[in-house]
Length: 373
Image (cartoon, rainbow, N blue to C red; front, top):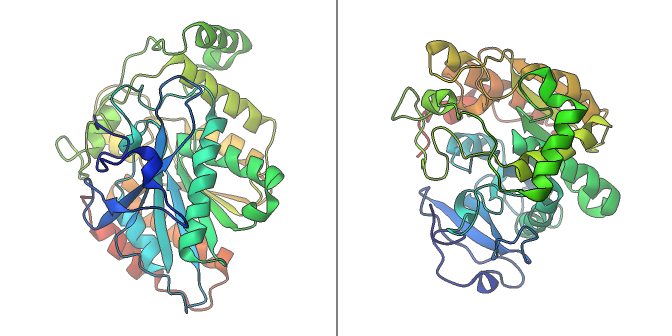
């Protein structure tokens, strides 16, 4: 587990941000990437000090001040995750986007020794670092910057709720958002139907209020981690301290925050921008790895994504990717290429490119990298 909020910066959190922008330092996890600490206020959940970490390529590609195409991506991870997916950044770079990723408070590079990994009792609190990160990206890319927000799993739920709130509270800033890409968003609670009933919801809320850090009594599955990591059956290299093979324990406080966010989404929100939802075409439930795990979402139920995506707004496209994993961009190569192809086609549509870079070539560059290091 990292010793400091960003792992690499000995300075105090308050000293890491300067006017007019952020102070960048080399990232210890990815070559040729840099990080900047975004200090946050006191932690409402009592685990001070808290901060978020913004990540960028050391030499941002694809955006020239004279190009007239000031585009960027702000990527947000899911639960038990952090940014390591360099091929995804390479794909966006090939299409002329500056790529930024955000490790949220108590997640990934932002996790401190005294903190509960990925712990929050209100997903809305992430709006603080999301808005600060968006402002920082616009400051770097240029005053005419248009930003695509990308969120995976819990990050897909969190960013959707934030965009809906931003649309209402700060229309001027929201107008800088070009679109949203949701990679297997967590739109409902997986598992047996009884878990989504009102009585169970009330039990979760009661325990969350009394003992928010109480861990849910559930067995952690190794199947997904074993399908991804190069030390088991996968092809990806990442730090198992930041993304453990079986995932971090889930607390009642966190799951109550997720359920509250999901209920809000179920009532209907409007992210206010064109939205692409990428998901697998199938789910399966298992605690042990088998080859079938490589061709399905073993974390969430894709039927929930199909059902609730319509509640995100009126410009939503849902694309099932045959044989995809939970993170469609970490799927086996055929599914991964399909996901990149769908993303490329959608980006072309929302930006109205006349002659965009070849999608196949860009996807090739992104997918041929194989292992993210």
